[in-house]
Image (tube, rainbow, N blue to C red; front, side, top):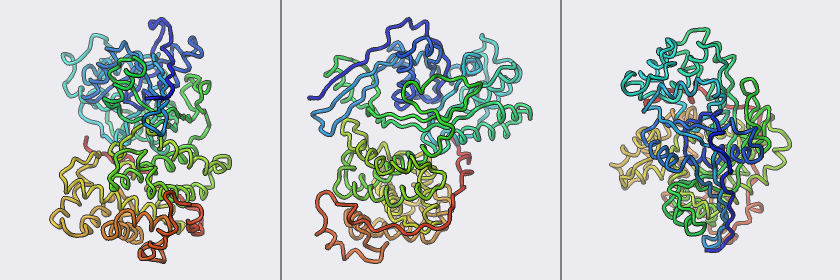
Length: 569
């Protein structure tokens, strides 16, 4: 294998001089490749300024044991391996060795210790990468018990630990139960609160985190009115926009790292070179690391940045994974370089998603001016063969991703009478993906797997049919589709694309969407032969796209309440 190899070795320092200022829930690949990278860069630039802003991780799930044990065996160091290339045999590699993750504790081993850590005056920020679903998990018996003990001051005792001293239910405490218990302890002791900073791929994630905390406190009888007001008025919940493609680490990745660098590491984090972080500058008492010194943007309003990123990158990612999987592909880079899929994605991005951004009066002109460049950047990042992200991984939790990332765009487009054909094809492909998985007996990796699989279980009896029974039931799921479940025009558009995939095949359906022909236009699929004659291996999309319809009055969907619907864990 050719390509350059560079290495940034771990900061040479006395690890004992580092202290925890940030506690993080959800120490997975993305957190390790993103927030840790910025903080480690800051430590290199100004050790004295950054040494008190290192991290302690918290795991609440049983499989977090594996991450804790790996990090502990590595003396809390690990490599970030950023790779770039379009040829598997010629990839550039940069290894960045990180030291800013000091420790990791598991709440189910010692929930009292976790609450004391969060309640410590030195903890200024509690950050989260817990996925969309993590914000919907309701408080449980253990959470209520911890809140009761926090109010009584029992958890202040450093001798109190699990499993001897606490109710066994406390071992099942959730993220927001632990956060609330720690905030209750701080409030009782007269300490200032910490900042709660979501780093999940959620629109207005700071507001999502705030509502989850406030609503949990409202529903908990252990919380009084004074404490609830303090949570509302004194705690800060900045929104963030985070971006770095970070696939799961494979055995081959581990072997390649050792072969090319001599580094023998059991769980390096693999990612692309590109990273981006936009942070709302709203922290308790202004206390935070100077992340802006190492490339992060600190701004008064994150929303325009997050809207552009979530819609053009995350929504496109989801649309790509289902059509790519139906095309028999495995990896993201294979899908985005497919001669039919790439022009379909470009049309979806420019004619539907970017159009929704241009119609938003709150989008600043400097971002609108670079939309086309951003589309090109996103597609080029997806082409990076070194990342080797799998379509199956991107397809995980499709119901949550659609609900919080894609649904609002469709609602806006329909309200403005704009085209949603690309979105209809995205959902039709998702429906085919689910139908195939159920018929083949494959596991659906979705937090709401039972909900989205049920229509296709019902449809299995009609295995030779078109699947419209299952599709109708699928589109009826209001927990996923919201008001779209009752929008006949939207349902008909999805049904037409679904049937076209069945009757004409995926490629013909993609061609119809690319050139604006077929059942969702003023033409039909019989005209595809003319389109094929105009098409080369890479379509001249700008010359063939049909202009979008005229936008109508300003309208924004306001359907956020569903984000906070409680689901059983």
